[in-house]
Length: 338
Image (cartoon, rainbow, N blue to C red; front, side, top):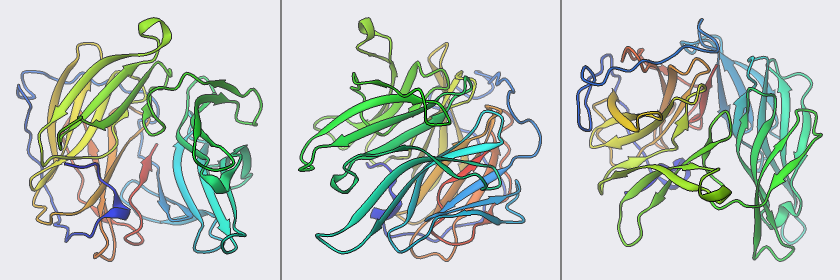
């Protein structure tokens, strides 16, 4: 079992799926109905896709794709993490640029913010010792206006890192760093920043386990709030909190299907829903992003030997999955929804 990783896999042939089925880990959906609250944007979704170093805006069905931000300076230009502002008028992202040849490379790694149309693109935070591997990750633009991110600061030799969890204002002021950072650098944090969800390998096995951590637990050192284990052969991608913090959504592949496990935080119960079936390849990449209404989301599936990835918009409460649309190319795996 392994976590999905687009850059470490050969790939797949995708099947167009027009309907879904429902399955469950212990009870059927009818036995545990989801009472998902609606917040944020309840109208048609606005989608943003990351294409190497470009941000592409499009409608809910993938129509009218428009490049609103292009940071591609060379073949070493990349945009990684991305998040919408609470009101959907701005977005934050992490940009890496590198130029030159060894040993004279110049690398930058920055947290940036821009208007939804790509204008007023400015720096919020820049990594130090970028060439040695300093890294910004796990960004979230929280509803109180604070931007959260994990920061791995490399030493000059690049052999050691100091990991911190940080908040900062959107104008780059008010940086507050918490150096007690025991959960790693790659995870999803809840909107109120009280919980973290991540996936780790179980020691001595080929299995993966999803952990939800209470950051205030154990006297502030952090404690495990909930865990989900998966048998060998199940492939996971990054889990995420819904905007209202009531649910954690975990996308995973089991046999020929991609499913989501929806964990209710208050009751620590889970249901499983199937989004896509009919996948026959052993290797694929997939990514799931939840929208601001804490209900809808978009699943994107792709791989190296296909011309274009496909995205499926879904409704977690009703179980309805829209027919897929094709993205610009196979490099589009992360499609965000507001």
